[in-house]
Amino acid sequence: MFDPVSKTLATPTATTRSASVVPINSHSIKVACSNCNLRELCMPLGLNSEELDQIDSVVNLRRKVKKGSLLFHNGEKFTNLFAIRTGFFKSYVASEDGREQVTGFQMAGEVLGLDGIASDHHTCNAVALEDAEVCLMPFDRIEELSRDIPSMQRHVHKIMSREIVRENGVMLLLGSMRAEERLAAFLLNLVDRLHARGFSQSELVLRMTREEIGSYLGLKLETVSRAFSKFAEDGLVEVDKRNIHILRSDLLRDIVGRTDCA
Amino acid sequence: MFDPVSKTLATPTATTRSASVVPINSHSIKVACSNCNLRELCMPLGLNSEELDQIDSVVNLRRKVKKGSLLFHNGEKFTNLFAIRTGFFKSYVASEDGREQVTGFQMAGEVLGLDGIASDHHTCNAVALEDAEVCLMPFDRIEELSRDIPSMQRHVHKIMSREIVRENGVMLLLGSMRAEERLAAFLLNLVDRLHARGFSQSELVLRMTREEIGSYLGLKLETVSRAFSKFAEDGLVEVDKRNIHILRSDLLRDIVGRTDCA
DNA sequence: CGACACCTTGAAGAGGTTCAAGAAATGTGG
DNA sequence: CCACATTTCTTGAACCTCTTCAAGGTGTCG
Image: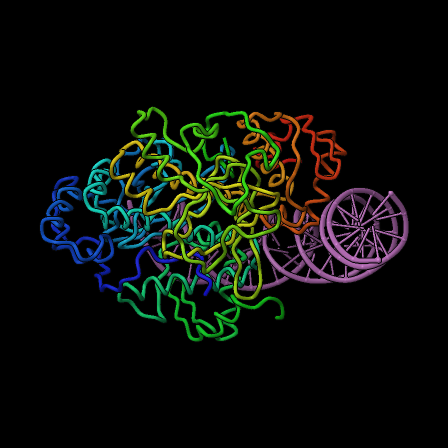
């Protein structure tokens, strides 16, 4: 199955959708992974309690990110990876001449910041599309821990490889699909990842604008809007602003998969 | 500077272009990194001799890959990363309906196979575009070594992150550039990477067909051909089949960078 | 309530694709 | 080593998808 934006982790875990349930007063506070309900999404399974304690010592801070504000930006020194606890992000790159390309949308349990490892500086930007909360994971601590705990090491490698595979899928999408195929693939991927987090298989709320979807899919916002209208007209989805109800995911899948025909 | 296909490693090292200088009779043979002239491209610098010995024990096999044959393919069990010694590869993904998308072109000193880590199986294919030779690096040995040698660990992380950053660049290219911008960016990137390996800054020989370039750039082969003709007509390059002579790299750079205008 | 961001829809236009034909290079087998 | 089949590349012309430009509508927030 084609999967342009594969989920960071497959383990389904119900999460709350509200942004600020954890009492946080300061800019960032100490937390413990060992009793985090997203642990299955962030960390390798089957660790003993000693290893869990070690991990608690890595993920020692949280940070709230207000809607619209940057988690990190191009050029910024890289020190942390970020695990999303709540909220929704977009990451994007910009060329000198001002063009922007959304490179991904990230949700709870997914990791941000991998781009920064290459040069010790971030090369893309990450913005919260709704009020969000992230765990800070100092990368040198992650590397230390990876040396001590092989399953942790393997986990880190898998997360990075998964991102490479995801981007391969996006290249396929951008390089060879038509507008409606792209949007269908996008919707299916999004609802899939939400479903893996305990949400509906058929309903979703878009956290991003048509323009941001368009940027991600290599389309103009008008084209995205028209494709939504076409899907609605054909009875594949109901579209009410950013509330999407998928009526015929089977037909959406057909659209993604077809080589030719209309 | 926009860089859709950033080089795997920046260290310039002269290499020979011929494919079969090393005497190899069997399918694969033992070799030593410690006296490989590509070591600077593949391995972290500043290792002591004991660490170099350890690395020699990782990269213990070479394999010849004939032009047109697969190094690995989608679905194949993942066990090794591959460091290219000589030759030129393309990697590509395929969707069920038969569409193919070239995801990258790789040359000496670059690493193939990172996609396989995520699921223990490769998700893309790698084909030699000319007779090639690769070093086999068993990934579990790489992980062992990474646990012992922090600079090795960091090196592996950087290689993976670099691939993520490269793909971000390709997404920008596919999502927001016009045909001629894409081809200009492609040529500049290719000649850059070749130059870092001791080749000319202005002359290059394409190892791939127009169709493969088109697949990578999200264009049809006719469009690629026309863009080449346009560049030649405008005096930016000389094109003789697959031999490209870049006359005005400054103007090529302008083409990549411009937001609008003609 | 007004300003602003976001979304939809129509009409015209452009860039790239598709289809087609021919030329040049490459490889194969005798 | 040559003849022939095949692959690769180029170029033209018609077509189509998506973009651009434009206008109007809706929802949101200070």
